[in-house]
Amino acid sequence: MKAIQFHEAGGPEVLRYDEVPVPGIGPGEVLVRVHAVGINPPDWYLREGMKVMPAEMRPALEYPLIPGTDMSGVVEAVAPDVLGFTVGDEVFGMLRFPGFDGRTYAEYVAAPASDLAHKPAAVGHVRAAGVPMAALTAWQYLVDLGHDVPSPFTGRVHRPVPITPGMTVLVNGAAGGVGHFALQLAKWKGAHVVAVASGRHERFLRGLGADEFVDYTRTPVADVVSGVDLVIDTVGGPHSPRLLTVLKRGGTMLPVFFAQYDAEETARRDITVSNIQVRSNGLQLAEIGRLLDDGMVQVGVDSTYPLHDAADAHTRAAQGHIQGKIVLTVPA
Image (cartoon, rainbow, N blue to C red; front, side):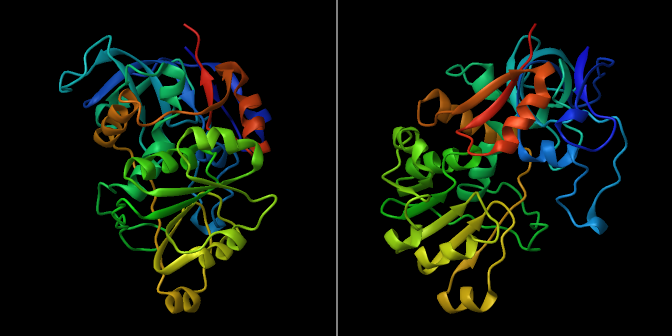
């Protein structure tokens, strides 16, 4: 089969379209013919040699590596002990995360059945491939964590704040993968949602249900928003603490990417800061799939590239300002 792999860490140019063996399946697994692959930040973190992590924490990587966790496709073979999936089923999933062995940038992938759900009929493979990691991240932050594993970033187990009608939720970076799902899940739960993004995304985000929109390139968020119950910040970085001022006393800050907050300030404001590392969960993905089938959640697709142009897709990702997800298509 054809697959994208890399033999050394580096930029998008290290991604090669190679011939590799079709994987075998073991207990608890199914073989999936991949139709589309969703691109996520861990894909380029891995390609770069995990430089995003402190040197002493970086895992030892053995090359060559096939990147990728998210995919949508059709079941080709099923291990004898697998129940609930049969040959010909359309499925989607995030495979073996956290970890580096999803291997979805390929024509075929061996997938743990527990990481899969049946693909919702309302969306094709391209949109389905854009769902798993981003939607599961939003779900595990806002709805149900689904496990009791402490966050590697805080050492504490995250407990989602129940979102109820009348609450105000602000989503920073609302147009991106996690952001546009977080906006929709908060609306599904009845919240009043403030979406923060650059102006070109306003129509997209209002179409997903945003009640208010702030163009951060024109207006500092803290100048026009206050009294927020919960912030989910998908941007992170050194400017994240400025969003503390929009929260009401007793509010909650959920940073998706690394951000540092002054412990004295959060204590003074009685603000809870909590985060997670998203984990594969086929049962949760099935619940998200039902929302997609019911039209409660939509999938934004920024752009698509054929599998052999994965380097171009990674170049697009590095440019930022993405609306929804970038997806690789895998021709038959």
